[in-house]
Length: 176
Length: 355
Image (cartoon, rainbow over all chains, first blue to last red; front, side, top):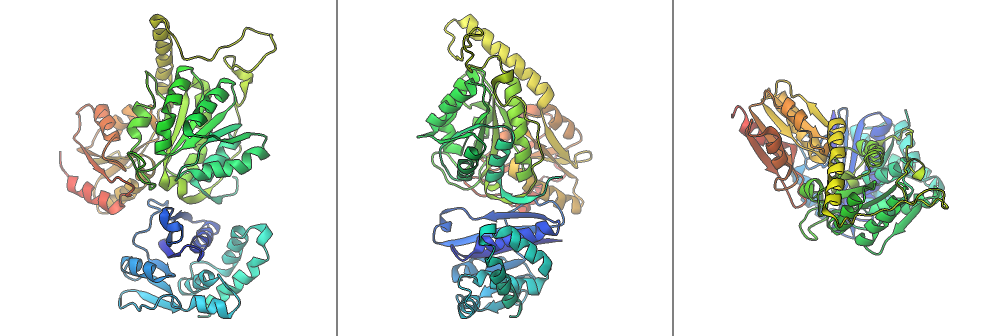
């Protein structure tokens, strides 16, 4: 079993952060994982993307060009990657920022107004975590126990007070 | 077993250097390896070492020259254009028989090129890392964990043979995160205590040592070069490494190093699932080049495919190694494009049964 995950949006939306979370889910569950950011000029204000591979077997290519899971947090990313998703794949779209509706019938698209939900719930900047919550609900890729462990790994000790609100954002995403 | 954590390749290289007893780092920032400098700028002072951002790559490698002469374990890192600037200093270090570790996280070239992953510095690192008759040890790890494990080996062998050692990575390996564990390593020869050649200060207790690469008498110079090449023979005999998978009955053997070897291995495994007899050889040391290992692995092959992120550089060494005994073909992407396993698989299929 291998998940090829692609996360894409603007720089500053926390794309790399949720990538790191997903990689830690795999590590904690004793799978093979890789995390590869885009590190070109695009990370300075333009679009940003991150490839995460989680697998039972050693990973060949850490670069994901045909994802089975895609999170798209802006329109340029949606346009660029929607057709690369493999048949049967799942796509999670921040519908506050992406107006488009997908007409592909061979994939499942989930529209979550994540940026709007974050603003309404005093979770500014956590639209990424809300989408991650939705992904967790629809894929069952990790248990809540694993999610909590990963949070504590990824969030540095001096920001430990943020673990709780992050977990709340995950749960909010799971309710969508 | 030490606990695994996720680390970027660049940061893992830097941490591994500290654990291997590296006491001084001299560098100059360049994408995609700047995390090495950034990490060491924080960590080195905490372990009583020296981190110094030099005014240029040329300055940094000459600081390494001086530091290595004192017998202290030291390192520099850069990416392709920066390595070109360092080559003069590397030649002097080789000429003075000094140990050091140099990291090249390759990017596309020539010139300033690009900042995406590449393997276009193969010729430079294995054949012309500076002027004159010399070699450097060249290691080509293929994962973040292997990069960590290679650092200790590179320092140990550099010290043992008094020669520069290069870890040849690329933007993919430098930027990606993978799980990594740091096992405790025995640190040998990290300072001048077992290095009688080092110019380390002695208060007049012994004859002074001189670090030098200038020999104006041709017979003296020839002798130093011959002595150095005799040591190289010992390195070749004891420290050549390659990993071979699925080669025993392989009709097409794929040869690739570093991150490309991972992609090629995925292609070979996909080929096997389709009933195609493919195998893979991954040279772990690029100098010394695994000539015998390649010949052994290709014994039953009908043909050989070399895959690189370049226009084809290592392919020439493979042809020399096989000495026309097998047809050798090449597949490569360059400029920062990473070849897809599916492209490599298509090439394997195209070659299927050909001889």
